[in-house]
Image (cartoon, rainbow, N blue to C red):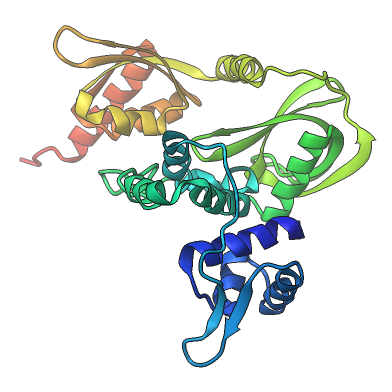
Length: 323
């Protein structure tokens, strides 16, 4: 909305001083022409913004001008500043809105606390792009237009038409009743019903979306946490393989990165960890445990132990000394 953009423009100038039209356009994700029109609108409304021409010119507020935004204490502002810059800012397509909110948070602080909170927030890093093993997270890419349509339908309570591409099958159009959005490990899921049946759609597989004017058939109140737990339990029990594993604690994360889910975990007397894991099928479990060599041992099922033993025997025979 234009009103929000005008506020963001004023806050940018208050916080960073003189800025060029090009810089403001990049920050606000609009064209330079739109910025110039907004500057004119602010001047007409009595906001003391003026232009400084020349090589180092730009737009600036008169000294001493201040917007009044109150209601946040120091720790509340610090919490928002620390959490905001993480990769989660793009979740549900709300990154630009978050950037605008952060500017308002900083401006809401008293002058004496503003620099202190900003400096403190730089001491916190939330969800960096790589972990200690230099592994980059796998993040689903969802087109902004798709996310906006889905989000609008969820919030408005309207039916949603999506073109969905299930794994291994051609994409098809379908009309669903959206219930809510859930993000798990940088993957976003749409919880919905279709003809009264529960459906869960991974948004990265939604190729197109269209909010419809018809009201969605769904309850007025919803417990997303309960619905997600129930659907997760059904998913894990549907055709998946449960495996009991002993693993070296140093390789725990490597194993969890390949499993579908962890059902239980407890220490073993010998210092290893005993994990109950879910895999897609026996081939998936065999591949995952083979990567860890002797750092992991499958205890059950016996069929998996046999498959790993036969594979190890075949490899040993391949490299046996010809003499």
